[in-house]
Amino acid sequence: MSYNFEEDLKKAEVSEVKFYEKAKTYSKYIVQDVRHEKVYQEIDVDFVMIKKETGEKINIEIKSDDGIAKYGNILLEEISNRYIDSDGWWRKTKADWLLFYMPQKGYYYKIKVKDIKDYLLIGQYQTKNVFNSICKLFNIDKFCKWKGIEKDSLIFM
Image (cartoon, rainbow, N blue to C red; front, side, top):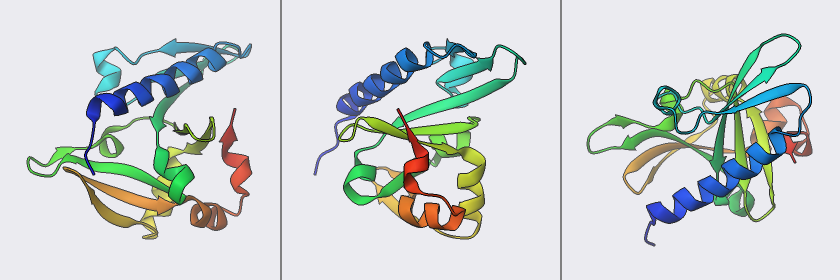
């Protein structure tokens, strides 16, 4: 199995644009596209949603992931390149919410970063080598059972 980084970038772009177009329709929020701003790239945040009423900022990171629909698992990149021990996006992100887009289904799962961190603290993940990366992998059904929620409650769009 070969990996195509350019293909992954295209999938990511589609999922980000789809989110941005939808987010712009929300009357209670202002959405800022910060994908190309270095300061936000360094903390793995794609969009900032600002509540018009309060000014509260919510950082959003978008990921496109074929594996969720196929296997029910989410990958969190801990180490981007294990040969040079570079931090992966999961270690760097300052997002409040992660949205995982499933191209096969045409929608996202929306999960609070804090909830994922709490879940990982109880050891409910596997460590996987994926190409040059080291990732934490966890099952979405088990996460929902632990959280006491229906999987459909995570659906966004």
